[in-house]
Image (cartoon, rainbow, N blue to C red; front, side, top):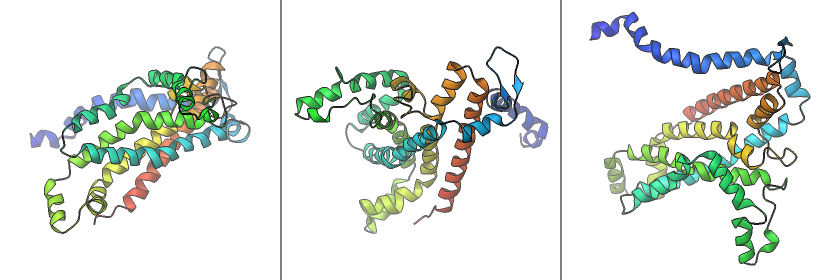
Length: 294
């Protein structure tokens, strides 16, 4: 067995299926997207090579590009400030060996397995100004002055969609952190209790340091998931009103499939991929540098 594994051809043979799938479904589409981004093409007429004109247009003359980027970072900010801390608290709670913890774990995770489109449609009805549950609840408790056109007002549309994203995927991050917490040996906590480390001290000096690798992965997943958000925005607001809730992925879809401007749509796609890769790399470097075990 060892002799076979030492043979490079055998190793290459084992890697070939995975590399083939990776190349066909990841590398090739990215290369084609980069190729399209250098052309002007409506999907019907012959392609016209225009070099980096689409990139110049994106950074200098597209009035909706920077607002879309800014809105993407609003999603990131709320994910980091609210979603991940809430997921960690829930993970700590359901990791306790108490009756019903498994049931609560399943309940918190249930929104994750629901169709994102279905969840978005459900919340669109909840936000409906006439028949929605949210405004009806506010009226029932005497707060009619706080009722809003939640998805139809430029002041509230973005945050309304952000809330849905944060709510739906708390369970996803909770499960990742729960798995990490479960991997920490019990004898470490027992030794800490003997030394007087309980409650917050135990979390700060044991749980968080030992979860550093899990947290790093989870932060990357949360950030990338927020940057490439599409379904919630497209279904609930379409990027409106007045592009107040638009994001790069929605702009990409609109340009490529509604305006049939595949070249510029591909340019936005390339930007989104590069942005996610760079930010993931930065997060990985920063969190690796700041990992300290107490």
